[in-house]
Image 1 (cartoon, one colour):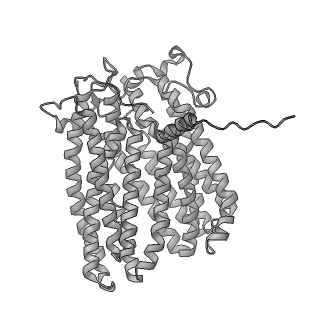
Image 2 (cartoon, helix red, strand yellow):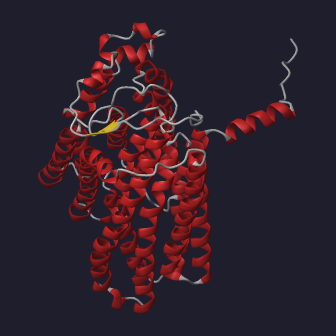
Length: 509
């Protein structure tokens, strides 16, 4: 038998492949996630070698203060993004809960897009001022507590001022990227994010090498956020340029429609943030720094795998939102089904790589650092998997513009903390207490209830969706898929109707 000849791609085929990769939202999102992860590994050696011990401690203080910035958003970003997807799907109006009846056309409603844009711009100006007031007062107090332990209090104060200005720029600039992404310009939005993160990393590294110390990271972050705003703003306004802005904008009415689900989403974010930090505090208090390093590394690795796997679905949320606005539930199923399985498969492959290769790599390069033992690592993997699925189905449910899972989620977070405290305080489980607490709390309700509940809102069953995907014809969808599902939802406030404009729809992915 003759050996089968290997087919070598022609230059045209290779060019087509490169073009497809260049236009892939999934590929660019993986690059972005990898860049975020690499930032820590690249900057960490510079931080350790260029900062003294007091400055290193202050560096982490500034990082912890910067981590409060997303909480100030309080859920406005995702809520606005959801309404932008409705406008792109031709919605003539938006309402506080549920999805309004479909518009007369599937073309984007440019009047509504302009109203959302103007409202968002005004809103984030006020959020920026709120951040200045809250973070400015609290952060100054925290920094001043130990500032005299640093080599140069003046430089430390300067670094804190730069950190505060950068935090304000973050919240004021990043909403442009969210708005652009929600217009189904996912590839462009991710490319802008990759450029901004790369610029941030390069500038910060160069400043560390030049001896700028604590000023390095905030200055790098400032220019990264500035690039986000400039590039995303230019693209958004370019997409809207052919459709003049309305002479009047109903800011108050739009904010009244935004608020009901915004505060619910903000409360969910805050409860999750506090629970994560409370678990870290429990680990530090009862088990020490070494145990926290072991636990934190294991959780971080699976969180990274979950983030990479979730990209398959995340890039499709704008398109799913457009289908929701048109009440096209079959379209939602057709988009989601293959992405669901790609996400699941990617997660399982990534977890297998961690379990098999992780201990070996840490032995070679980890300097004595370890992950959790396998009997606790597997529950961490299970918890990460279920949390990823809960996030998927919960986000899908939120595209209906309702959040029925809010209070169960808050209760689960509180119960998770109680169980972790009880296990670590009154048992000999050690690190296993922090593993079992969140897993048991989630399994009691959230992890099993919401997937079939959300599948029914799509007019299908959970197992039917997993095994068969979307029906071949719209007529096969059950009665649950009719617009009555949306019409029965409570309507507290409604904004509309808004005239739909002409023009082409945002590019599909």
